[in-house]
Length: 164
Image (cartoon, rainbow, N blue to C red; front, side, top):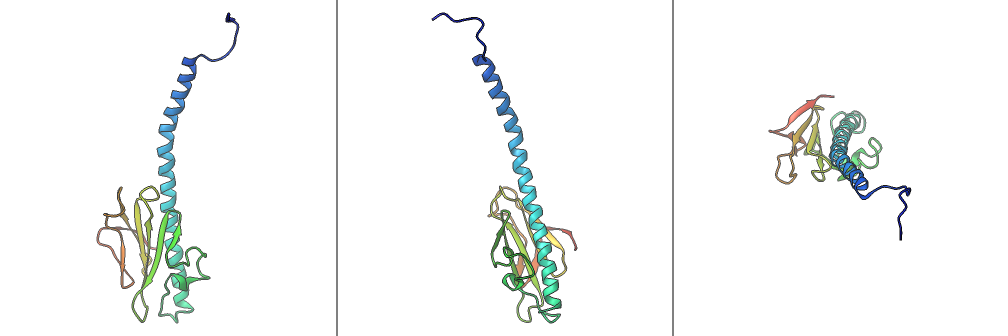
């Protein structure tokens, strides 16, 4: 069959150039998108810990008789339904709120990322309202994260984000 020189379309080389340009743009954009998502998850975790601290202050002033704090499920009605769970999962983080021993006059809330792709820092807050962060790096299983001991933030490597 004889080809007509007036046929319109793209040559194979032109199509390959377009595909290569799209691949380069994707290689640049996807890591930035993932980093933005991780930053949003971390910001959500900090915000949720602030919510816990406000709810604990409210609980102590009302139901706690100005002495006692609540655990996660005791904050039902003061925080959203997701955070009121004892092992809440939200925005790629696992949250927990522990109170100290009887008379329950301390509490500690933690936020730990579920994987390095959802967050690279763990967070904790206690009765003083200071949120501590600890960088996790790439491996959430070996890094030091803020922990709670008897309802008090036990963190020797983290840095405070600031009080409320």
